[in-house]
Length: 484
Image 1 (cartoon, helix red, strand yellow):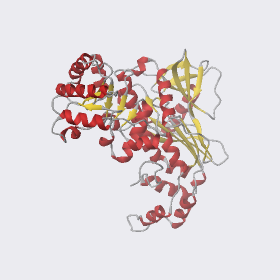
Image 2 (cartoon, rainbow, N blue to C red):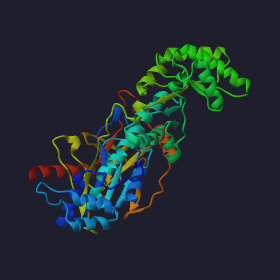
Image 3 (cartoon, rainbow, N blue to C red):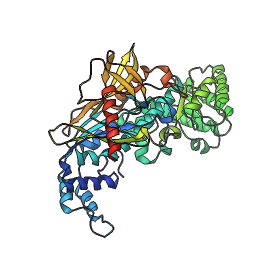
Image 4 (tube, one colour):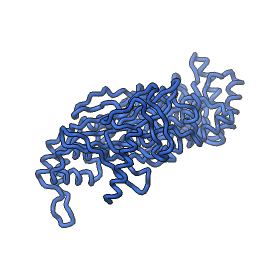
């Protein structure tokens, strides 16, 4: 079974290949094109997202090849008349194709917002088209999970969160991708051992109810587990009677202490977590076991954790599974990948725009970059601009949803978010590991105003279009509608 790494180029929608064929057949494959990936609304009703997935995207692009078995399969595809979909010469062209585009992207762990590019691909139009679906799949899902993790960790207010979601994830690929993305988003560990091996994510966990059920008595199960795992002993106490389970855990903890060892914690996985955690804390403290941590799990998400924290539940470690690994509450990021400029090789970029009756679906033309402004150490706003157009000394950005709302930005400290990743198909970027991406996410989130991080009704962080680009966009919209 193939597990996450570099996906096959056939992990795409058929129309990407039929369009590439049409570009090749019509002679348009000579053109360069610029595409941007954006998402249109805040996931989970929140105020931000955490970019993730670039590491796997880079691996995919670096290894992009159509192998002979891929081409043999494509040769079997036919149209409604039974004739082959693709000419043999096109399949030969695919066999010889090597990725030669420029790619710019925001580093993993960057806090990002709707309607600003998080990835840009510029180069031969057929190549840039062929990678669309795979890039959306990789970056969209992992950004979604990293964002969910950041929200869960925010709700936990600094208490450790362990990702427990592999058994409920959408397949092996979804499980591995989710484990890494959850770590980038702020989780301290995962139960997923393969993610630990592959990505260097710390692993952790306890035992299951089946361990206790295999014994005649719960205390015997606890004692045997403590004998097997004296340096990593966390006992699941709710198989039968939770408070009795705590008493048995205390007894086994005393036995460990007599041997110079330590009971690390107990886990509660059902019932009224706030009530049981409070009773368990009282019992542990009375037994002189203030060091023993209380772990909680059971269908947790950011809202539940926030509610439990508000109740003062003495929970030290949170195990979050299903609702994290599946990005519960937001089935997809809703990212899109849109053409924004074309040119003859070596020529000037010509802007392109898609116009829609829905203003959110009208695209921004040009070769786009995002400039983030910082004021007093806090992110102050993001401006989308065209790299091919000179910026005025005193520029202003326009809210694309309300052109009357404008903000002057250019005098402030700033950073351009899209960094070079590939140039002419050669990687020029050293991809940080998951730990470095996690550290970046933490640093980025620390620079967000707390109002943006609220779980409910967050402040909408300002993202706008540079005023000159806004005027060009408006003119192109009017021209397109006249033409239509």
